[in-house]
Every structure is written in C-alpha cells, then in structure tokens.
Length: 286
Image (cartoon, rainbow, N blue to C red; front, top):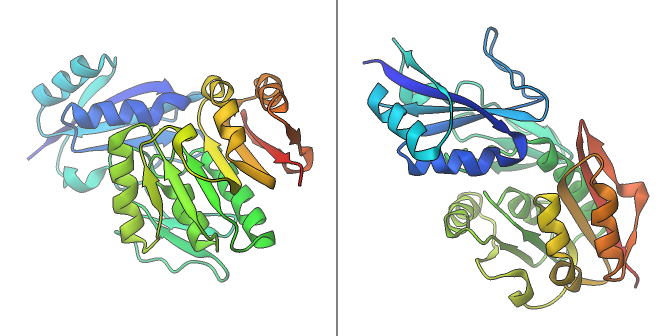
C-alpha cells in the first residue's frame, strides 16, 4: 500500500525540535536532511542554514493532520510501491568523526581501526548526529579525551545522548548528561543501554547537578548558552575545559564574553568551524 510523506524546510538549528513535534503528531519516522549530508540523486537539498524534514505517515489525511498540528508548511506526497516503514532509513549511513564511528542499527559496517562505535538510530525525534555542530563536538571530545583519559564529563542538552555515549566509549570516567526534555532523557537512556554506556542521566537544571567536571560540553543555541553561563561555568573544574557549540558565525563574541565574566579563559587554538557553525573552547585556570 502507498504511504505519504510530509516534506518541509525549517531553520537548521530547529530541526530536531520540529522533528520531535512531527513524531508527537503521529509520524512513523522523520528523516532530517541537513546541509552537508548528500541525499540520493534527484532528492531535494536544503538551502544554506536550513534543514529538510521528511516525515512518514500511513495515509494522506494523517500527513495533513501532522502538518496542521505542528504548524509546518510543507508538501504532502504519495510514496508508492515501497516499504514506507523502511524508506526513511535509506539515506542514513554510518559516518566517522574524530575517533567516533556512528552507525544505525540496520547496518553492519565495521568501524575503522582505532575508532569507537556508537549505534544510534534516529529515535524519530533527535536526529542522527550528522549535524555540523555535533561533528564539531565529536572532534573536540576525541582530541581532549586522547589527552585526558579518565576525565569526568558533563553533556548539557544531551538529546539522543550521542556525545555522552561517545565520551564514555572514548575513555571518559564519570559521565553525566542532562536535558530539560523528559522525552530526550528517556531516548538517551535507551541509547546508552543499547551501547553499554554507563551514564548519569537527569532532567534536573544545570545548577542542580552535583560536582565539577574536567570537561563540560553544551551543544545548544547561542542565546541559551549566554543564559546558562553562570551555572555552566560553575560546573567546570579547575584546569577543566568547556566546549560550546550550536552557535553561528558572528555569535562568538557575545558567548565568549558571557563566560569571560564567569572566569573562563578563551583557548582559541581549540576553536573550530564547519560551514557557518562554530565551536568555542574555553578553560578554567588550574
């Protein structure tokens, strides 16, 4: 039987949240097609700074209800003559960033030598980890944990749990992860169990997380990073690192200044960029 897809374009920074809304509205799956991820030949690509969401529904009425419920303006199309329950998986392939190999569970590719593997399905709501900001964080974590095996780590805004799971597999010691969305916490818990990664997962606000950490990573939006500067900075141990991503070119100055006021020092040699996205690396003095 044919199925129906709802295709809509959204700001790249909002892609995961909008995908979650589509799942809540009844989508059986959502493909997040981001800039830099090459689609199948003939498939539409997102504009710069945008992402395409392709949500799959059992019939046209369900797809139209999904669009109405989420307020997303998109095109509904029939998907004939294929197993639509599997169709959304077709462009999701393993990828390697730093020393981390991420693969969906339906593939069996072996990780490259020296890489750790994280098995991560989209979870229908929190993406696949292919966004440039996630890649920036994975590269930075690979380098830091090579230098500081056993370091403690806090992942704020964990989403699918990818960064926290990867950190644990890269050799981090205590790994805590938080998210204000209870659905995200549950998704991260399921992913951690699948990967055999021991994480401390919580929905508590940052200021209520006990202790300080050698590495704190937050892949959120720039305005939220500024708002969270006091509690995030307070979680960084003496000599520890803070990795901030989710910000666009031109937003670095405001974010860096917010953390300078909290006593963290810029470490420009570890700053990184991918396209229009940026990662800032800050450090607390020993």
